[in-house]
Length: 152
Image (cartoon, rainbow, N blue to C red; front, side):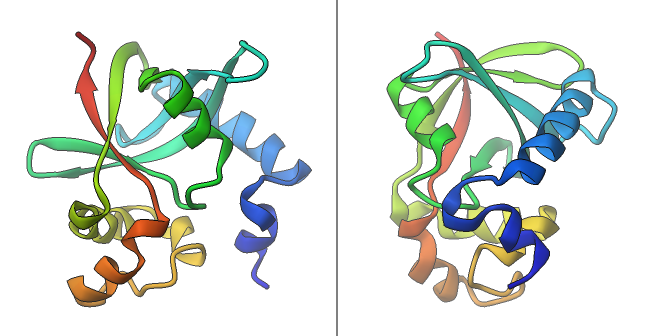
C-alpha cells in the first residue's frame, strides 16, 4: 500500500490526511497555489456546519469540473448531493456555484484530463493517465464528476 492510499483508506482521510488537507485547503483558499487548486465549502448534511476541503479542478473545453478521486462514498460527494449542488469554491475569492452531476457515460474524458492534472489521484483511480478512453469509460461509474456552473 502506498502512502497516498494509506492517507485515504476506505475512502476516508486518516488523521494525518485531515491535518494535511486543512493546511492545503487554507492555502488554496487564499489563492497561494495555481488557480486549479481550490477549496470546496459545502454544508455538512448531518452537522449543518460548513465543511472545507482542498480539491483539484480540471477543465475540458471551457467547462470546469470537480472529480471525487475516492469514489461515490466520500463525504463531500454526499454533502454536495444533500446541498443540491449549492457550494462555494475558494481561490483567493469566494465563488458561489452549483455543481451538476455528470452522467457516467460522459465522465471518461473528464477523468482522463483530471488524472493528467492531479498526480496524487493516480493512486486511487485504477487507470493509467495515458490509457485509452475506453479504459476510463470502464471505471467512470465509480468516480463521481461534477460540472461547475454559475449559481442561478
